[in-house]
Length: 569
Image (cartoon, rainbow, N blue to C red; front, top):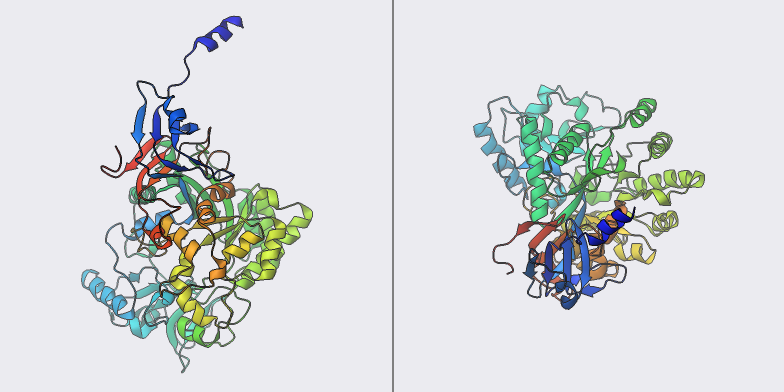
């Protein structure tokens, strides 16, 4: 025993591998302390402090970087992405910007020239809220192509051209499928819009493309997209709708030590009318076999309603007259769609909780939010929900009552500022006269003590600023601070939050929601060495300059994984 003690005393301390000094270090610890330097040993932060204190730790083999006054942040987390679909979306060809019917038609004509007759042409995910016409396209818009079936992907709503409708035998006599709706014109003829009714369409290609992807292509696309996230300053993500196939791809990257960022996965389970089978599936759900610091599960998810950009989010009130134009609705009292009724929702959530899952659900509209909170309050009476860190996802259309209920449960929310930035102008027309007062109400959340995790809901496109739901984290922070929309207007400025709070949404609060606050989310001794150095002072740059911040260096697990040339010496 004494011999072992002497060996311990004589053994040299681990040498410091990397020191970054002469920096402005935003630790994002509990007090939001500032420091000048950071020392890293292995994959952990060894010390944080003044230049003098940290430089004393260097040895002959220590790499020392002068940050030249640059700001260093904790590694950033995007709490809501769909990495594989995004990676595949431009795997073989860059997509144009779909901002009008004209742009959509130009894309269809170009694809028709290179696609064999009779094969599908798909317009990748696009929302009418972002089109100049402020309207859902109908079959007439897509009928510029007549010898191919055409599908317009608007997520929970699809639009088809006349060729596709004929091929699938959809006529004025066709009945609506269970839970779905066939859009019709004034004469009762199908107008091409199908809401939650893709069961009527046969032969629709996988991955919303006219070709299938091999497993290697999918693996490469996933890895490439995760590298893009890394380059944007992200060191961790939450992938919010993985299947067993997606899980296998992530595990393969993790086992071969090729994960560019840390990944926390949300298992989304499709819900069928047979609740007993769904519960059985939960009890025999997927397992994770990987280093938890790099890859693990974070939540169980169901899809409770549709999307606010397409008129299927389940609202408390009807979508109104402008909503009928924007979404192509045929019924004046449409509130959207609730996909799971209260009884089955409770049984499914209860089974998932019993298996140890934190719970969440896609819930955009106010009616869906209320239904989910009803379920959780019922569960909370049996056993407190707070320790699970279950969380609202999206929850865009809030109300004071719903916020109070969430605060009482002491649960967080996963929010996406892109919806406000890109879709706020159109939604403000759908819900005028105060209808947007509690749309993504960040300040009210904070006043009630609700923690927020910031994400993008990135799903299509490779560019961090122009993708469908941009994944640039600094764009998200800027939007949380300013609440500016694409039309230049500010949506309810009373709901703006501070720079510190916006940064916490992508660091410490995001890590807490992922049950990772002991290892990530702040720059503190003993935590994983995930850091992002940026090109300007986050705390002092004018507010509108925050969206233009660029990462100069990204460190993951103590290793420099991205560095702009000549950024620092």
